[in-house]
Each structure stands twice: as structure tokens, then as C-alpha cells.
Amino acid sequence: MSHVEASTDGGALAAAAAPRQTLVNTAAFAAMEAQLMQLECGFTRGFAGLQLLGMVSEVCRDGKERARVALEGLGIRIPPRRLVMSLTPADVKMDGSQLDLAVAVSLALLLCDGPVGVDPSRWMFVAELGLGGELRPVRGMVSFALAALAAGLEGLVVAPENLHEVSVLVATVSGEDAPLKVRSCRSLGEVLTWLFAVAATSEAPRLALPPSAAPPTLGVNFDDMILSPTLELAVITAATGMHSMLMRGAPGTGKSMLAARLPSILPDLARQPHIDAMRIYSGCMERLPPALLAGRPPYRAPHHQASAAAVIGSADAPGELALAHGGVLFLDELPEFRRDLLEALREPLETGEVRIARSQRKTVWKAGILLVAACNHCPCGWAGSARRICICGNGRLLQYRQRLSGPILDRIDLHLNMPEPEGASAELFLHLAASAAARQTERMLARVIAARAFAARRSESQSLGVAFNRDLGLHQLIQASGLAAADFGTLVQQIIPDHTGTRSLLRCMKVARTLADLRQAEAINGDDVRQAWRWQSEPAARERGEDLRALGSISGTSSRSSIHS
Image (cartoon, rainbow, N blue to C red; front, side, top):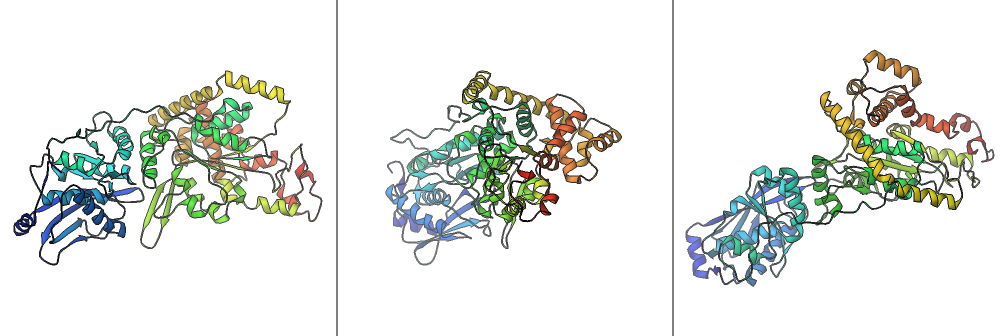
């Protein structure tokens, strides 16, 4: 480096005689949380070598050698003395390659002479180093930026690939008056040029601003799908109140097609869910998807052979539940998923969180999802179909249906029976053309946005403190219904059967509240409750012609029973 003079061996001895130390900031992270770490560096007596103190992993220890080679490429040589680097707090486990840049900066500050134009203790340095000194992206950058904001640091030094996500995060948290500066550097040489405030031969790195990017496309939408009025109402209701949904039907009825298009009528993520989603993704990948950075809700669709850890998550990595936070999690062929995985969905569907307890770590992942599931009526798929004959016996049919337990079905808000398509192909294309011309997706999205705005104003005026109707408790639901407690109870008794469980009753009334929001009505009415009740598990099963008690009394009869008609 022409602008930085490396200390000679004599200079190193003088530095050892006069206790000179440096302090820079970096960070450690686990799951969704980051911890500010301070790195101190100084000479001491003893055998020559570079020692790193703290609970660091092998990846962190290897970072010492990457930093050494990168510094030597700039003409800065570490003298043959004992050099100790200490991480504080010492009892925090440090893992990952984000320590590399902080180690190199700390060594350069200790070994180089010259005025320092920036206080390094007011900045955080997080990047991986290549042997040639180039800065590379790291995971967890969103959490690091939040930790720097919480600590009141002046700024953050990152690799160019991490610039966009940090800039979006800072803008989302702080708006235009961002208290945290973000500086992107391509190499260690650029970082030291800026630190030592000496004019470089190349252009100095500039303070980063959020780069302009083309808005992401919404992908597939409902303009190429024909929806009956009832099905359209169900889809809009699910998107408005973030109500979970289970679709049953024969192959070709549009279950997967509908699920893939559901994100197109979801509004952009609110501030806090957007931050949480970016933190989750940042912890498992170095570059965030552009759609997520733009605030679009995520869409995840794991295969039914996925393991429980892949869907639920682990103490170290998020699963599909957490990765779908704020968006849609689609489970196709729901009965084919493992039973323990399905039962593990109970708590996340109730609380919006995944709690994982291990002997040495307790982890909480955010998982506020819109669950969309789909399944057939039987293993072959053709029970109740007018197009083909079901070949499943009653035993197989019962076994297939018993894969979904009552508690799981009880936690799903909307149960939809998907009708088989009717009409000639020519008429179908005419309907599709009419749907596209009428801008069906745009109209549906407008209804969802209007209903959510109405619900938000109502929730704020009543001090309910919930983002969606699915999160309403019993007392909140009575208050939100717009009815007196006695009238609320009377409406329930008139429409909902007495044998209905409490959980099903509450879910039915939450859906009714969302239907009232779609009408911009302050109070729910009987029509709202009746429609919400039709979408519950028991009425939907009766609509399909299911009678499990009658089926259980039949043994060895033909599969072409009344259940398949």
C-alpha cells in the first residue's frame, strides 16, 4: 500500500514496549438474534504467533490466516512477535466468516503508522476476506445491521453483495433520516484507504445509498384462472384475514393453481413482518431474494417427502415455516406428509412462532403464515368424481382420511370442496380471456386492501392490538363483532350446532368477522356466520357426502358406495 507504511520489526518491538492496542466492532449471530462483539488486539510477551481468544469456531480461527495473507498482499507484514486478539463478551459463541474483516482491520491499525481519519470503535466491520483481499458477502447481515442500530454505532462496513439488503433494512427501520451509515468496499485496500484518510490512486468508496431496482413482477396471478363467486369470496377472505385453508378435490380441479396465485392478492408486508422476514432469510443465505427486499410476501411449497427438520426448522437453521413468515406456506398432498410433522404444526398455527428446545439452545422462529393445504378425497384421487371411478376400498379410504387428525383439521379456518370443471374447451378459453380483460387479480387485490384497511381502523379504535382477524381471542372477538355479548351468543346458538367444539366455533366467528370487513360493516350478521360455518370442517365433509360412522360399519363392500357418489 502506497499510502500506508507497514511497521518494521523494530517498529513492532517499539509497539510491544509501549502497550498499544486497537478495538473494532464485529458481531456474532444465532437464529434471528445478533450480538455486538468487540475485537481487541495487542502485543504481549511469549512465543511468536497470532492467538485468537474467545468461544470461536474453526471457521473463525481460519479467518486469522485469510487476514494475514490479505494484509501481506498490501505490504503489511506481521512481525515475529506474540500477538493476542480477544473477543468480548468472551462467553458468546462466535461462528462464521464475518470476523475476517474485523481481524484484518484490527491488525492494520496496530501495525501501520499514519493518521486515522475515522474512529473504528464507532463502526462495525463484517465481511469475509479472500486471499487477494477482496470482500465477500456473509450470512446474517440484516441481524448485524439491527445490532449496530441498537448499539448506537455510526456505521457499517460490508461487501458490495450485502449492500442492498442492509440499505433496505436501514431505510425500512429509520426512513429517510437513517442513523446508520452503510459503506460498501470491494477490497481490504479500499477499507484501509478510507480508514487512514489518505488519497488513494483509485476512487475512494462512497457512502452507500439504496440502489434503484426494477420492481419485481408478481409472477402468476388469477387473470388466467376461472373462479366461481363462492371460491373467489373464499380466496379473498383467506387473504384478508390470513385464514388457513384446506382444499379438497379430484385431480385437475385447480388446487395447486389457486395456491400458487394466492400471493398475487396479498398486499406488501408491513414494516415489522418485513424486517422479521429479512432477518430469517439473511440468517440462511448471503443474498436476499429481490421480491422479499421489495416487501412482497414469500411463497414456500415444500415437497411432501420433506423431513420434519426441513419444514419445522432446527435450532440453527429456519425451516419452511419460518421462511414463509408473512406469506404463504403451501402443503400439497397434505395426508402424505409425515404424521409427526403434521402434529408439529399445531402450535405454530396457534401462536405464529416455532419454538425449538435443545439441551444447549432455545430458539424461537417467527412463523406468522397463511397455511394453504390441498389433498384428494382418496389415495387414487377420484372418489366422488364424475369423470372417473374410484378404485379405493373402504379400508384404504378410511386409512387415508385418518392421516389428518381432528386437532389439525380443527386448526384450519376454511375447508373448501373444489368443484370439477365443466364446459367445453372453447368456452373455457373465452372465460379465461374475459377474466384477463376484467383484470380479475387487480380487482381482488383492491378488495383485500380495502378490507384490511377497514379492519385496521376498527382494531385501532377498539384497541384490540392484532394485525389480522385470525389472531383475535375470545374477548377480543366479542368486542370486534360489533354486537352485545347477549346478541353474540344468540347469533351463535341460532346458526352453529350445539355439539361444535369451542375452537371450531371461535374460528368460524373469526372468519365471519373477516366477511363483515369485506362488506365494510361494523357488525357481523347472520349471513356472515352462515357462510363461515359452511367453510368449517364438519359442513364441508357433509357436502362431500362423507359419513365416517356409516363407513366404519361397512367391511369389505364395494368401493362404489354412497361415499363415492
